[in-house]
Length: 396
Image 1 (cartoon, rainbow, N blue to C red):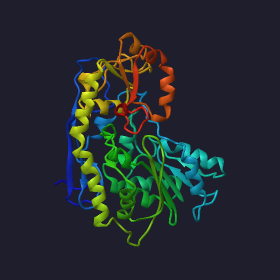
Image 2 (image 1 turned 90 degrees about the vertical axis):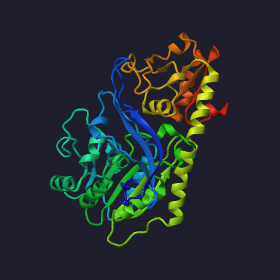
Image 3 (image 1 turned 30 degrees about the vertical axis):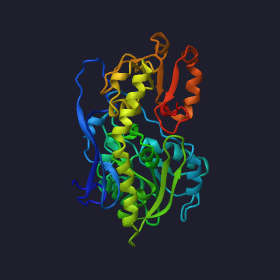
């Protein structure tokens, strides 16, 4: 067995090996352009129950090649987060608050609106040393080290509140990132960290959520344990509900007292969840292939990493004609892995497609349906790749 990237025990049980896979942000400029493939395998630690990738793709391989690529995290819950933060002991409007990436800017803006007047956002180049113009979270996670904490403290002082959204799940060295937070935050201060909640994806067998950039698939239990193992006391941990993937927000502070970790029974719950996810993979893959084969000509709508993972991990490239996307920067490119062409959504009608699978967030599926009435009016069907959507492919 490999070593767990969280607790360090040599107890990582690899349960699902997808084989070599293309990087999902590597859009191709030509259908025959060479592309690299890297191992993608999912395991769970038998000692601490944390679900994680067994093999890591080097950050320089993950770094995007296009400056227009972006990832938008849900933010509706941030007002609730700010209300919680405002009441933390020792935190005053004059307290220093530091966000570490561009993903924290909207939280800092909310804090500024309610009177916090010392909010700062770390600079990607000057503070984190990221010089590559396309460097993103894959580069940030490398830079969050104890040494970086010392540099940030020298420049800004030690903040009473540190904010870090959607980075921890990307961390190749999660213990270094958490130690960075421990050393950076002021004595008595707090950190606010946000990650996706993997529970529903695992329980619904949504394989599109397995991503080479997400090292960890945290659940509330394993995220709490992650902080306990790093010497933090968890003050608050909440999973904020969204239609596709919930957002986990933890508020924690450094502690010298031992913190509770998962019992063997709780570890069993976590390992069993991944076990079922792995065991059902052949069945789900075969069911999707059979559905698409019966449908005839099919397409996907939305050329992003979720659609790439859906097609590649379920082996559906041979059943799909193209991927529709109305972003002109994507049109004319080809999807990573499957090499499917990316075309305008008008081609759904022009090419007489019978089934179009939406890969957009469920919150905007109704809008997408309204925008594609010409397609559905002539008998085309819109369905969703997400098992919990009212438009789910398996629902009909």
